[in-house]
Length: 161
Image 1 (cartoon, rainbow, N blue to C red):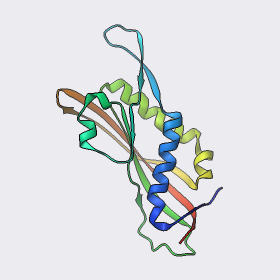
Image 2: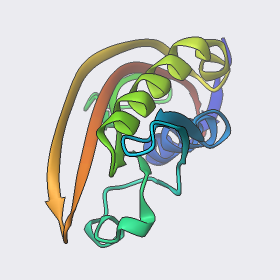
Image 3: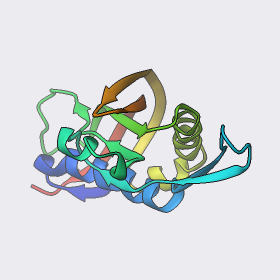
Image 4: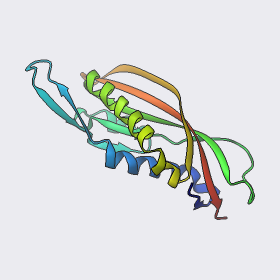
């Protein structure tokens, strides 16, 4: 297991960056069947973000959007000796097609499962899918189909303070 040197104020930012880097590399597109033509169609992620943004989601041109939200971290007092914290990180996918949403959701969770060694090297260990959710919203004449997976994790680090 690798220990990352990080200031305790940067733990959340560091965790977000690790997940975003993994997803930019590994979660880029899915293939679905076009319901009108019945031919395969590739759906490519257009935006990767580190926070939910209504303005970004108002334009259909920005979809699909993958969002790695700020993790909720334990409120334990982090001291020089404390080199581990527990957190929960919500990861969302927003698409205009429900089938694409489902496929991206599965792909995101599969990538986390199959890249545990990479994440462990960055100090993110003991990953467990803790919760998931999905829904559909109407936004300006189109449907936003979204799904969210919340992963519990431990972050092992060397305190750089």
